[in-house]
Image (cartoon, rainbow, N blue to C red; front, side, top):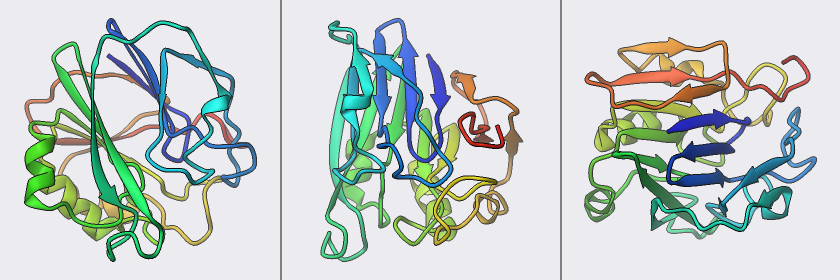
Length: 207
């Protein structure tokens, strides 16, 4: 399974069982980012905000992916969706791996939600705060889930992201093992020890 990050919360997942784009963002919706033309079997969006919902920007192949897709309801804030509405957690299972995309999660997960998630091998988690969980809560959520590989998203980086959200560093300071890559893609494999991997955003003005 190959994972490619396009900044913010947008990823392309490719596997032998098919391909999916998660949370593509609309033109002009995320400062500093411009989504390239993407092709996949399916598009999965966590909620309807423009920085996570632009399915028309992805060319669909017409094929039906063979991986297992699970969708778990959650909220965009700590008040049961009163501030920002609902959020959907997505789990993709293929090639013996379970990948979880938390979307714009705004709270710690309840025991019932953690039970539905089950064993997660790869976790894509927002860490920037303001609109989502912040670095401290993200660290708690990551520990609650216990994935082998954790990849932060939805933060402010050099040349991209909202001014009101934080950078990735406060989250990384709470993690035991951190690997920074100089590329935007990663071949996913189970990790025997928990590790946090930072991908490089490829679509900024400074890329």
